[in-house]
Image (cartoon, rainbow over all chains, first blue to last red; front, side):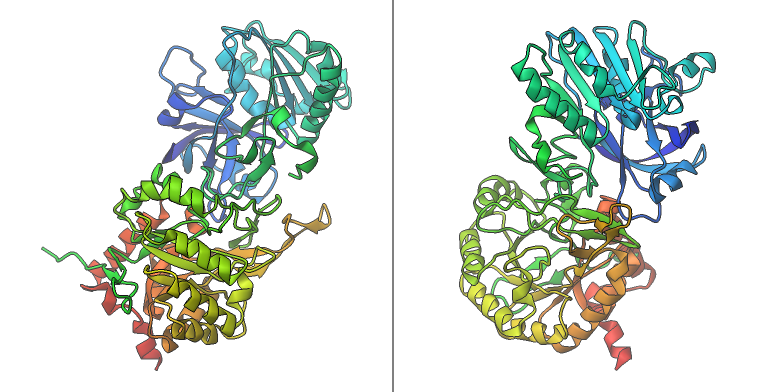
Length: 278
Length: 314
């Protein structure tokens, strides 16, 4: 964990209202694990903004062999801080702190990984996919409101953009609420079809998606389906980002946890979902 | 070669042992946890002192989420004194502090005078604890906390009870949510406080207009950050005028210039809170900035600057 000034190497709107930013940050690129995050200072604002590490790469191009020197994060312009960030230009420097928190974990015996992304929740799961695809079979269910809000994996190949391509062998299942691409509905609608296949489930998305999954988990215990070993990434407003200020505490079945330090990744079953108001 | 400025300040001149800091820059309670988390990011051993989280007799869960909301130039928080309790602090944290060069001051909170006394008594003789900061100003708890800080008689009573229970220097942290902070300051000075720190946060709220409800889970919170600096500075200026014990200035300090304003207003030391959320190493930057100012202006002793703006104001 380090506080460093990092140069922006690219910043582009890759989906409507969603930006992909690459920065040069060797220390973070070398040490970050999928599910970890960084915070950055938006000038003029009191709180740093947290962003999941979306990709690591070298020299702007995703490379598995070369020394990792860059990281990317994917963000939605949702308020004044992210608006400021979206306007930053290549070459400008950002005050970055990271990598922070505890990321996703893969058990040694797991072969089949099911990734469930709701909207911008795709951000950390792309990193997990890059990290795990050579050793594991992965299915990615990506839900969004409409086709334009789905991560454009295909553009990554065509335009050699800095988006992540879909790693070989990954089964990609798009779901849209308006039916403009893939099945109409929500990611959680088709999730049950994959539960017996998956050894582990990883999810990132809105709290309502997690709540739906938590209900499924309860039901699964009664049936033969197994939504078990499911890890979710949580987000609340954070103060320090490393466990000192207690701004992001939540109550869990395992006691009080600080999302920034003990998480952001938690076991779905450890969260007391009826108490969650974030 | 220019002589390096002398930063040393005495925080407890009327205490038999005193409390000398190597420099006036402290981390305020609440922001830095137990200091241990910060040690991973910044060289906190260079600081004047660290004030740890408000500590109660039993562990405390704190308030519901959301606990933080950013406001114009500031931050509202309603953490609600979440802490591990004094026993865990003594067992887990103090042994780490005992090996540190930087003194750690424990912020003590309670719902009753008995609780303040009990927590303080437990800290007596604990290696690694250099002083007590009495928190009679937390706006985020339903019982105790601020109610002791808004009544001069209660403030005096809790101060003298705690003083009687410890041989450590006692700093009393005052609330700005009062009609006349000078009255409270004088009352705790009379009751034996070795120093006072001010200000704690100002009560405030924010409303989410999309959800049509208060932003904070606790509805009300404490406002901190640059937005409150002029209020804090004025209160320090006014209080330093009337008390003889050292005043520690706190409230919205975000740069060396801010810190120097508080020192010139009469603060012997300063505490950094919210600014370390914006930039975790800000305390060290502020310390360097004060040093540069002193070198550039030929100030050899920081004490020469303390309260200097009071003189011209007379």
